[in-house]
Amino acid sequence: EVKIMKNIYVIFAREIQSFYVSPLYYILGFIYLALTGYFFTIEIYYSRLAVMENTMYNIGFFTILFLSILCMKLIAEERDSGTFELIMTAPITSLQYVSGKYLSVLVVYASLLIMTFVYPILLMIFGKPDMGVIFSGYLGLFLLGTAILGLGLIATSVSKSQLVAAILGVSMGIFAYIINWLSEMFTGASRLLNAISITTYFADFTKGMIDIQNVIFFLIWAIACISISTMFVESYKWQ
Figure 1: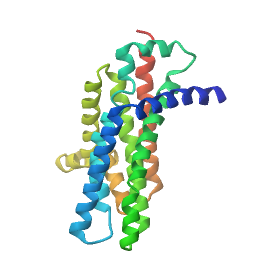
Figure 2 (figure 1 turned 90 degrees about the vertical axis):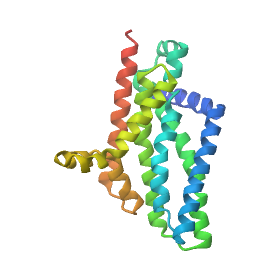
Figure 3 (figure 1 turned 60 degrees about the vertical axis):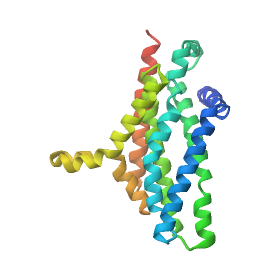
Figure 4 (figure 1 turned 45 degrees about the horizontal axis):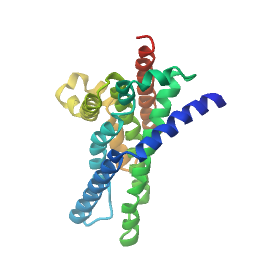
């Protein structure tokens, strides 16, 4: 078990380092913080209330675009450059490799999310917000991120092209986000579509409702995506 964790950590640390020396991270980080600040300012300006529900929902949709681009290089870059084959000759399993990649981008996302804590702090200083609802919203954003990162991981596992991986990740993310809207068009399958819609589960968090079933849903989604990505990576070993 120690060796397994060490292998995952090696991939994790290597990827974290590559993120923090990449200009792309800082560009995306700046855009992310600028847009979240914009959503927050607009809601406060028009509602005149110490709330963040709409801000959370808007950030949730933008998170799809942001995280898909953040994920695009995870595996595609190494497959394109040829370093993937070299890494796979090391005593490391495909699952350990994929897990290290996933955890690294999850930590990067969490670090950016933490930076937005300044908004609820401002609400506490100048108003009386319901911190329970805000905490629930942030938990929802984090869990939503675990699902979207999982889709991005699959996308970067499928293609050697970072551009294709980004487009595929965004497409899958948007589709996953609008599944509940499709349920209104296909009423016969509405129950099924709502059951697998990440928007349905995320919306509850923005309203202050924390349900263990919703948490489990996102965790299962993330595990499923990691498993699928691992199967793709494993298949490349035999090509």
